[in-house]
Length: 264
Image 1 (cartoon, rainbow, N blue to C red):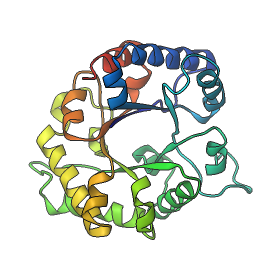
Image 2 (image 1 turned 180 degrees about the vertical axis):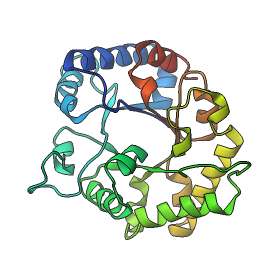
Image 3 (image 1 turned 90 degrees about the horizontal axis):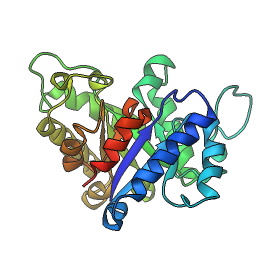
């Protein structure tokens, strides 16, 4: 199975537009033949304020079990004086099965630390929610590739901190999203990692997972690609990974329609 993660970020502006967008996604998904529907799992990660109405929408009409809901972020405590946050048990109350953690925007804008991300992963796993863990280098120097020690060291260092203390019994519930920060919100293919380079990074991540857990577990942990994914480049990244993490393109009606129709 391949995963299509739709991270809506801070879009759309209101509930009506949110329901309209998720309805469009459902309609396009149902137009795929059954073989493709079984091959792909679409997970929508809206702003938390839209989770209740979307949950209700998906639960009370013909779109039940078509899409899965995910969280964009989470705090690692379930209750307390933590204004403006959302907890793992709150997500679980809406049958959330997935949640993004460690997104570069949260690290740069909200100053999330590696310890914060580690705590979030542990808290999600306790509630049987699969964390979609974002990893990736912040920048690339001229002529640097996936084989450079600095790149490997940065990504391996993130994984080492994020997965510290995660028992092997929980490893099958992990998902990794390789998301090079320098490739986010780019409109020019020149500034995106080429498929072979991305394939090598995914191979390196899987190698690290095999040393942290074991080879069989490493092969079964989904590793996705994220970073300026759209309907034009999605096929090349789907071919070399277990799925894609789509950002801005996931809230553009024309783009999301083409993206789903391009699933093969």
